[in-house]
Image (cartoon, rainbow, N blue to C red; front, side, top):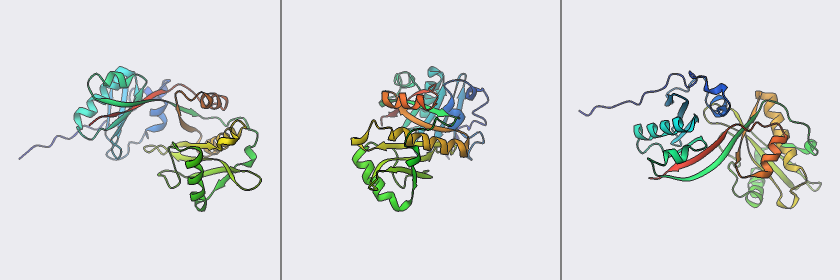
Length: 252
């Protein structure tokens, strides 16, 4: 009879105090302190990692070399199950010395615990209902075709939007959540391509941030590393910029 080896499960991803260090907000907000039943995790000197089994995605924080070591360990212990990973900037190059890493994209995980300054046009933001999903999808397809979250996506609790005087949707955004922890995650903020630069995105972002901070005490979001306009906006609205990350796939 063939023996079955069970992958060890880390009792506490937080035992090193990494979540209190700059650059580890993804651990602090993205991993529930009370570990979901059966979640697989790893920790080492200077890093911690955990697995989103549904996606085959390993999340890691800490020093890049230590985080890359945990990604390698996860891929070795769960061959065929680990398909992608997110880690501190540089993890992809280090893991790529031993794994076929592809499709690396640099991100910043940003967060705030403060309500932002009130923005012009913020009073125009309204909550949208399920009956508006078809309109939202058409708007996102036209003005933000690479959107990460769409109507009906998992974890979305709220859509909000701005309309022009004729009732036409000119901006939208969603309040979603991080899978493991349920932390509020802003997603798919988009404005009409012909109306950009008028503060609509800032108004919607501030409104959604305020909504999350008042209900949860904080808000998080992902920002592409090379998105300079978004970088300036999120900084102006009080979002911290301490968590440069990279996401990549592991080729079959």
